[in-house]
Image 1 (cartoon, rainbow, N blue to C red):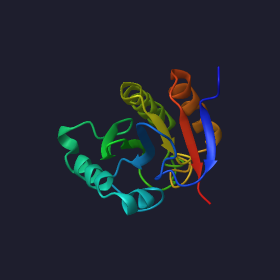
Image 2: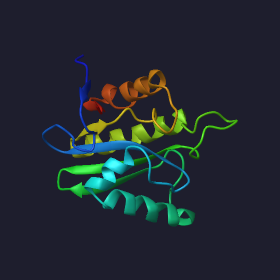
Image 3: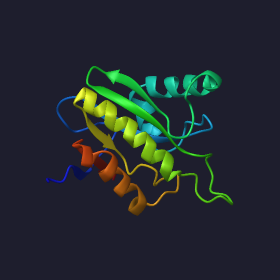
Image 4: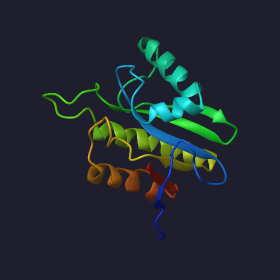
Length: 159
């Protein structure tokens, strides 16, 4: 089977592909937005941050929490997947904020939507910046959760 995971240099907030696209990134479960990749998203579009903050504010009555995904349309052919895969924002006694099992659940939800939309998925090295995750643990989740289901994925390394 052809490899559906490709790595390119560039900005994941400006996906390089034809057709429908989902930009996937990891968010925390505290409602915080303001560091890391989200800054690139907010520079392009206001909707992902506004939707995330409203989702967090209304969390008593919705699915906001680890493993949940919110898809926000920003252009006719582009959606941003706010994936809750990080518990808190700082490394502490429980280790880094990344929660691999939550990322795995998020990717399964993104795969379902990508399949429905016929979309490719674009992302930075999710979970490896502020969340403190290891790419050696994230990459297999992407391969199993998206690529194995026929979803093409592009990972962007920003210069």
